[in-house]
Length: 70
Image (cartoon, rainbow, N blue to C red; front, top):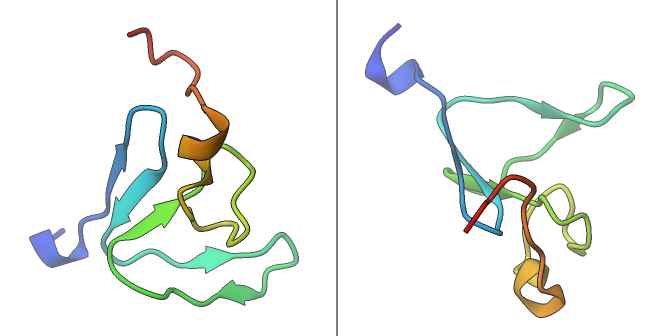
């Protein structure tokens, strides 16, 4: 796999998952989700109004990611 084909997922502490690389997102019914940019930030708090993408709501609600520890 070349570097341009690599997918890198970085969890931000108490924030979104930042996804870099060529990924395809789909809804549960299999229909595609349009990517707006690269990288993309995926919501982990479940409260974003742009789901599955992050809109920063995690900061407003005090989201704490499981297993974050510190």
